[in-house]
Image (tube, rainbow, N blue to C red):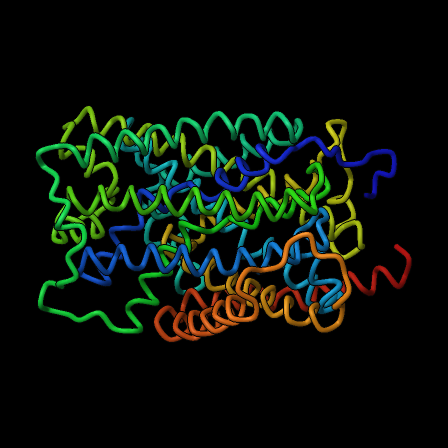
Length: 465
């Protein structure tokens, strides 16, 4: 690091690494995204298929990632891997994309849902309502719902400050939050499915409302929502320099953590779809309501709604916290290579990259102002899958370039599993450009803005600054 007197501590074992994976994934998607999926698919059974397919495809990507993580476990995750597979430019572009469009947008989107959930418990007074129609860049309304955005910004700033105090304390906080989240979802599933209001057969019905059909394109569009809920599974790779025996524990934690999440998501969505008909979910999509809150209200009334709102508050708090502390390590690794702002590589007294955390927090706040929750999540999933596909291509490249290299873990089902994931990534990217052109356009713009920055950082490096 730039601060040569400090080094990252390898203080995280397998258990805490799994906790980090789960904490980075379970945030807002499991509670909120079933409603937009219902609006796209009009069928409970197809929604469950989307969640299952999304989990399987994500697992295929995770298994591919795990092979490379086992070979090259280091701080920075894919940033470190891509440097050896594709070279400095592509590696930089990945790190830049995380800063500009992927991880910072994830922080922003989760914090936004935290603020929405808080507003459902304690009404946040409206702010700057007269400025709500001010438009920036033809598509952004920075002051619309400013009361929600203001609280989301406060959350990001507070958690950023707390994360400058040290990594192990942050991981332990995540561990406590994960236990609360899993217990809360278990209560929803057990009491919801056993309630007289539940119609479990309804959750598996494949019929639509008769007004639309499920097409290849609508499935892909709906799966953007599922992939948002699964986003974050690779974050433990960014902490490779702080994990004990990373070549073993990074791939194990990714695979085991994701399997836990897939199971939780399927059970939770069976509960939602058993308690809420399609018409109710479509109505929820058109309002500021959250599907999980409305499902809990069906069998526990207003008390259930309050319980679920508090659980969402805790979940989004935990996921925002976990995403903040894991993602900043990418920019620290970039700064070490002189491919990011020099100060981002300096470790503070707690041996964490405090400056990188602050830079990340400021840009996340800007993204909160830029758009709505769904705009942010669709944009980041589009951008993320460009690189997820590149990682799986890397499995084939490294098998050919480094056939004798030690691989603590080899991807199950090679070459079929990584090949399926690559094909799926290409299809998702193309479908998003067609069906969500604004979100895809913003994502590509933020990615390509990294090109002049790469030129500038390289120039600075050559000049020895």
